[in-house]
Image (cartoon, rainbow, N blue to C red):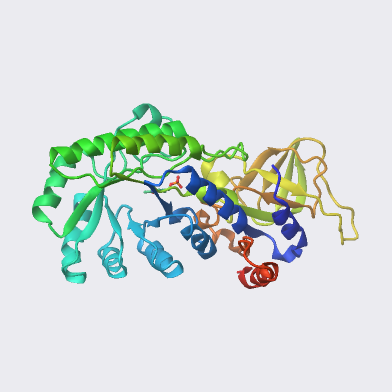
Length: 423
Ligand SMILES: *Cc1c(COP(=O)(O)O)cnc(C)c1O
């Protein structure tokens, strides 16, 4: 695992009491998002799933490369509207409350992803009162058992088996009839299906094809036009191989031929993790080193209450050690031996493990450690209050200004100062 020089330099320059810190490289995010965008054909719309990482500077950057954002709560909806006004929103998620639906209607939400008949009835009931005369565009979310060979492999399957997500396909025809016959203020645009996370490009294509074919047959049975299908997110991120990326080019080629078979159809995807995982780092320092019953441990400042991802996913977070030569204490500095080290946090629980079997021979108290792939489902899924340790800092390294005129260099220096927020 090699940390980019910009991040490494920044982490080395931070005073110890500014650690731990999340460091986000907005330039890396821009480059990655640009690659994803250019790999996909023009008929494909990207909606970023805000739950992966809703930090404002990340939303601002991604707004340039995506067609909209997917939000799954009233909180996300208000936050995203506030950070990136005017960006199209799709509002999904189970258990929407009347208050959430009302505020989504008031704030103007381009797509409602309807998760159940109750969800549908509530929307149909509130819409005429809050936005009278306005037709509300909906996608019905179905829990489809398509491409079972693919879904069975996913650790995070949300569809194709009993789950609280989406409408059971056995009810599909009845629900479509309900919308058409009873709720003319709702405009049925098509289908939404986010079935699993962690799928490779060929697996995602198999799911997308099956979902589109199923949706086309559903709408044809009711003499309705299928305008759009949202085939979900869940593009794989491999924490064991940080250099590997989801094959966006193969996915783009496959989606292009899918669209060719369904002229006029808008295909939408809503990736979260695969867009932002790579742009974030969690940087910290070694507080102590232990030899325990034949194994080596390094205790780091911070832990899984800041970066819960390895605990929830059951992986070793990829990391790099930055050796620090300063040592200000009068006693000798402790160090691990040559064997593998387990990197743990400060929490009083054996579950507070960030990475096992790390090759870090001679790792010393006071050295720094930078964990990669901490840009998605990291800080925002962590149990911050557990044990009441201080919160980490947050740094956003700005993307280079696009080269325009001479003097651009100076402008970018100024913007560095302005946009580097520590919270
Ligand atoms: C979580 C979620 C996503 C994003 O999933 P990733 O694995 O982060 O790509 C997209 N759509 C829905 C409905 C989700 O719940």
